[in-house]
Every structure is written in C-alpha cells, then in structure tokens.
Image 1 (cartoon, one colour):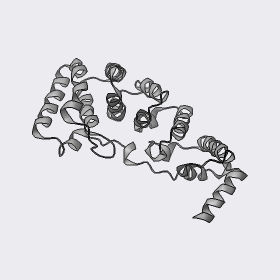
Image 2 (spheres, rainbow, N blue to C red; image 1 turned 30 degrees about the vertical axis):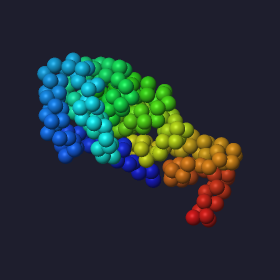
Image 3 (tube, rainbow, N blue to C red; image 1 turned 45 degrees about the vertical axis):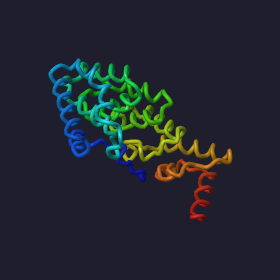
Length: 227
C-alpha cells in the first residue's frame, strides 16, 4: 500500500534517551527522581504526572514526542506494574488528565505491557473530536489491536477530521479492499458535490483498482493530465 507512515506514527523505543540532549541538569535530575519514586511507589505517579509539563517544558522534541509527552512516558514505563494493574493506573491517568496528559498516555501505549486492556481509552478518544487526541490514539497500539471494522472507521474519521493519513499507524499493512471501498464512496460524494478530494486518499484507493468507479476513474485521469 502506497501510504507511508510518518515519524509521528512510530514512537522511539526509549523516550529517556530522546530527552537527554534537551533537558538541563536540573530537569534531568528531577525526572530521574520522579521515575525512581514511581518505581518505588506506583501511586506517586498520580501526583508526579500532572507536574511534568511545568518542570520539563512542552516544546517539540522529535516527530513523535513533545518534551512533556516523552517525560511522562518515562514515568509510565517506570511503573512496576503489568497487565490489569498497569491498565487500571493508565486508565486513571487518562480519565483525570488534561488533553496534554491524555496525549502522553495514548502515545505511550506501545511501550506498556497492557495487552488489549487499554483499548477502551482508545475507543473513547475516537468517539471525541479533538484531532490531536485522535491522532495520538491511532499509533502502533491501535494499529496492532483494533478490530478491522473499528480500524476502518477510525481511518474514515481521520479523513473527515482532515488528519493526514500518513499520521495513522498501520495503513501500510492494514489497508484492505473494504477500507478502500469506504474511502472511494467518500471521494465519490465529494466529487458529486463539487468539492476537492484529499490527495492522500488516492494512493490507498489506487491500490485496490476494483473499487474505482467510472466517476473516480475520470477524476483520476483528469488529475494525471493536469500533473
């Protein structure tokens, strides 16, 4: 499939190393202490997690993280919990967090040993309208674990919300004929209404030529002639 995920969709394996060059000595020491405290007493994260943004900053770190997201991921990965206990703590942090804290939880899910138990917070996010949270929810964790029908609907929601498809993890392996058909129907509706078709839909739909009707084929030909 021709859509290539951007770095936004793929989390670095070690958020601590990504932070090394941007945090000063004081911030680095505070983060190390917070991680150690979390490892010794898991409930401490409920107090430490909200304070990260104030102590570490929130500038863009790389294609995946902001500084506060990566620092919060360090705390999450320091939790000495697994399975249901870890999922319960992660869910609590998400439920009581502000959008920045929720983004950090969602972006950290691929690094956590929670199995399918964090899918409820992914689903809850996908029912909302905050595009930054929807994008964060559709990382590798959702790509690996959402059922096919839910994954297709999530991709279609991204299209409606104008989230570029290269920010959605898993499209290179999970795109199928049914998703292409759904997107082709959307494109057809846009063409009939005289509206532009998002250009990043074409590579996916072209990968499944059988779903392209006459009207889409004509639009595709026109685009190629104009190129």
